[in-house]
Image (cartoon, rainbow, N blue to C red; front, side, top):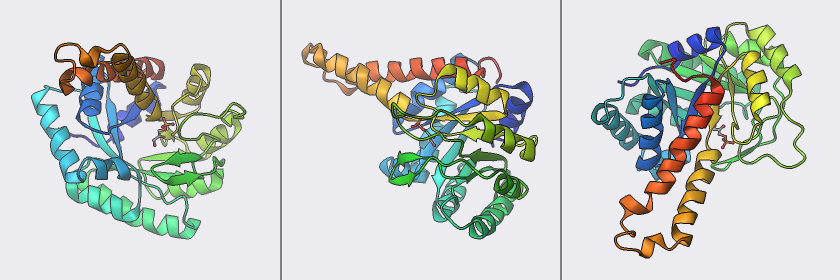
Length: 287
Ligand code: 13P
């Protein structure tokens, strides 16, 4: 059964580790992530962007697929199904469809409007026992057409949004989605520290997990980050393994064209990436 992300993140914050949010794109992604979480006895959050939701034929299809897998694969570790960077309308659609967690990304609204919309969604999520993530300070880079500049959040605005009763808070600290450019300045630990001081026990979320060096990840966790989002890195692992398979001509050998064979190396590569991240984040054995 899907669970809210609240309990797993409260435990993570107290235990100084982070739970990974891995974004899903299709059946292979979902299966690879769930099996790895189960094998490592780790809690996990499946992230679904609005674009990926559309690609997978809508939120109801996603809920059906994930619930089916939890049962058929015998997954017993805590799993949250979470809308990533949701719009106000997307958030409502996911609540309806049976997600267990949502992110409302109101970071592009003026702060007053972000507050008003977040408040309304917090009330609905509380009633339904769902977790809700809010964002302050836009996360840079491009993800499904949502483009941000990589700002550093204002700690006072973070406090204001945290006080609305959200479960977890994403604060921009110079992080961006996708690959980091050569001249990236790194995470702003000064901002993170200031945000943590203002928001206390609130689990903080680090977006743009792909390509952040291990020492920065560890430092971020020590300063209150309890959820780390990874998307691009699984895509790159899948791509590289699939390319190797094709370039080695394996798709032309025997039944190598069968999608169950063609997609297998990429699926295994996703598992490997998820495993590395769970080990780095410290969530192994914490289910
Ligand atoms: P990356 O694609 O950079 O890993 O970011 C994922 C993310 O933050 C999803 O919200």
